[in-house]
Structures are given as structure tokens and as C-alpha cells.
Image (cartoon, rainbow, N blue to C red; front, side):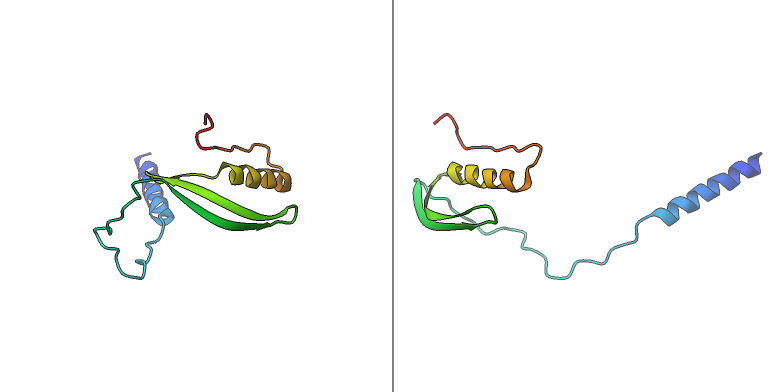
Length: 106
């Protein structure tokens, strides 16, 4: 009985050793610097005006846009979020679609 148990333990150890993932090669390239460069955010809100174009099989649109960028890196582009979500909904018809708008109480 002990020899069967010993054989079973040895077989389990060999199976576990053979099932381990192989070692991967190191990634090529150079290491990133340990200290990231300093960046600064604007201290006051900014307005960026741009032109946009959407070419989709079900929807083609273009126009002028404006993004209000506030300190702490927040942006308000809810109208684009809504339009792109509706185009996605129409094209792919997912069972669930979650859309998160920025500060909907304004």
C-alpha cells in the first residue's frame, strides 16, 4: 500500500512539474527612467475648438466641436459620448449598454 501511495505522490509531482509554464525571454528595449518627467496642468479652464468627422456604415456626420478642459484633467464631451453610443447601439445591438456622462446634474 505504501509503495502505491509513494508512486502516486511521485506521479503527481512529475505531472505538476511538467504542467508548469515555460520561462519567457526578457523583453527587448531599454528600461524606463525611474523618475517620470514633471508635468503641469493649466490652473484655469480652457476651451479647445476643433472640427470632427464620423464615417460609419450607418452614420456619417461632421461638424465643429468644443471641449472645455478644467483643472484636474476633466473634460465635457457628453454630446459626442451620446452620439457614438447610439451609433454603436444601432450597429452592434448589444444586450446591455452603459453610458457614463460627466456631471449630469448641471
